[in-house]
Length: 337
Image (cartoon, rainbow, N blue to C red; front, side, top):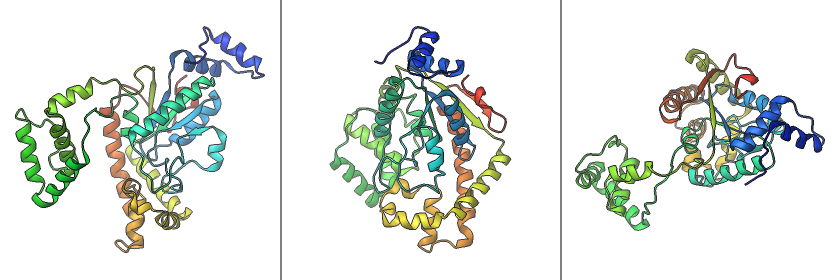
């Protein structure tokens, strides 16, 4: 892969040879990034305060930031996503922000391929990597398998969706039960998307869900050959609630409605993932007359708080063991050393 120094002094000498006199902390971080292939992860709930702390840590360590926020991919989705400003982006090199049009689809497999390329490139150039964001599924994909090898034909997908519309969800659940006599495990049988996906995989593979899940779990994670370190920023719920309300008020004052109007003209409503994002779906509802101006901000606040609760549970149950740090008191040096 890339050059791997044997000692921190070798790193320091190499940087000095290029006219860069690094402090001990930067030398250590670069040494770890080069020798352990160790991306560092800073994650937390919406509004917890990741951006500024990540910037200060990256500045102090000569690091580059890889975004793990599924909404920052989209060009023009700036205010409603609390995307780093131009001034913030100028402070530290950022990756995987503004990489596709709002009308385009982004999926986790594509993201991981781009993330891996970015991480390898940053490490090859001798810089530490800081991955930061709050998109739980994308974050988990660094540590766990994301997709099985079952191929589903377009014909089968069309057939099952037509049957869902014509026969209802119950009929599909009945078929899925017949294919899985040992049970459906923890499958949410009230969720049409998950039932469809499970039935597609069972029909296409001829295997039960239990076997498919075992095969899936046996796959290596995308970064299985890398050592990683993860920190989570946390705040007391009441403090985070206040920050969310303040952030939504700032978004409204900054022109969220105007931003969404412009994005609709660029194809926002044709791209379901982006259009369903909190802040955007409520503003679309307002623009299209489904909610009042008075209800807009409270609706965004309510849905953001609900998201935070889901994120809190997700981080606790779906991610590997990691450190929790109080966002209000954590200093740059507390993160990763």
